[in-house]
Amino acid sequence: MKEPSPEPSSALSVDSVTGIDVSLAVAGPGARSFAFIIDWHIRLILALAWYSVSALIYNGRLSLAPPPAADSYWFGAVYVPALALYFLYHYVVELAMHGSTPGKRSAGVRIVTRDGGVPGPGALLVRNVFRLIDCLPTFYAVGLLATMVTREHVRIGDMAAGTVLVYQGVPRPLAVMNLADAGGALDARGAELIAELLERWSTLAPAARTRLAHQMLMRYGVDQPAAQASDEAALHEQLLRLVGASRKAPL
Amino acid sequence: MSARERERAFSADLLSRAGQWQDAEARARRFSHGHTDDAVDALRVADDYRLLAHDLARARALLPDTHARQFLESAYARAHATLHQRAWKPGNAILTLLREELPEVMQWLRPYIVFSTLTFALAVTAGYALVKQYPELIALFASPDLISSVESGRLWTQGLLNIVPSSVLSAQILTNNILVSLFAYCAGFLFGLGTIYILGLNGLMLGAVFAFVGMHGLSGQLFNFIAAHGFVELSVMCLSGAAGAAVGEALVRPGEAGRMESFRIAALRSGKLVFACALLLIGAGLIEGFISPDPRFGLTTRLTIGICYWCLMCALLSGRLLRRRRS
Image (cartoon, each protein chain N blue to C red):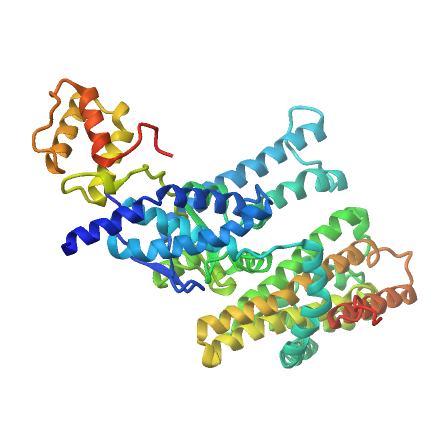
């Protein structure tokens, strides 16, 4: 079973009024690049789609070629919107999605301010304007280099806007457990393992889940599991009793 | 009771609140996405925040390597972000920017505006003097088409509307000008040197072209062309340069705040002026596309438009345009 991931190598610690700091795992160049590549494909596809459809409508035939002489309608309806989609994508989407984009969401990251909040429109604008520097001389070389050498893996735009890209913790649902009623040597970590086994019970092969159930029961307080190896329902029931969980599915 | 048993009892007590944590996380998620405006729910988010903080502190000590602790970390971070998310109303934000923030930024940037204007003026003078003295140097600053057009006795702007429609011309010009303005601001990141380079280069080009055009007796026509849009366009160039110079200064002399923090403050503050500059350049681009190349507009009309637009710019940046009336 998957172990909880280790402490992030770089974390942003934010003071809070409660006195308990908010710990945010900072995203590195890999997650950033992944998010950027997804977003780049999305905006490219959007811009090309707009260009193609509007050019076909404008030309009235199967041709994407621009008119031989400069034309206001072509410029206003085909060219400018396609460019706007491509160049304003990041700012508009980040504003609408409170510091996220489809690419960032896929990479499990989001933009936050240094106090852990959602960046405002001004900060997002400055962050995106500084792409002019970050993208120099080509392929975002300056930005990528900056994310590699800075402690919080920020590019120039992030430094200017006071933002950081952090992992968006998407918490897994917790199983409802009552450790107080659990017997034997069961601790919180063990209870979580059993809850996870119960959660995945139906997806595991019968031999595997029976073996794991036996191991758990032996380890956490039941010396001799009452049920036979073949009696899966009884093993399942014993595990449920051990963690004091209800029969209901996890919340 | 042994220490182990006590720890286990504390852990059990903590884990018994898993349901509350999940409710708190779901509530914070709903609010952060704007999916609810229930007042009772809003008040409960504040209570949730305290509960999560309390339980997270205990989980960090009692359950360091568990999913429960991970869940609490991310639920607490979400509640924190939700509570600290400022309401944003675009209309109010823009009004506040124009009424209060821009005048304050202009006040702060005053020495930088003087600096960038002087740099630009110096570059214009240098470009003018260079080409006046060595006319062949115009090849460094102007395109071959522009040179041949002026040498044949006509400005490159004549008949421009026969080739490109005004709307297309405007869009091209304003895009180009906004990009130069943004570059002048961002290039301040190179300790201000990038901004000085952009201001210097543009000034040299302007001075050189004016000298070259003057040598062929076309300076009157060139002034006629730029009269309507030039005042604002050149002023905005200096203002963007001032914003970039402030960013550079923050890096060169960061003060007590530290280089990174100083850079952030300067970039965010001067960025407000750059935003206003971009808006002004849209107007200048429209004038340059629709009025400047059109021979039907005489010099008086052009000067009137140019001066009025410049006054409008001053009123906007000083906050006088949208100042609240005193009751």
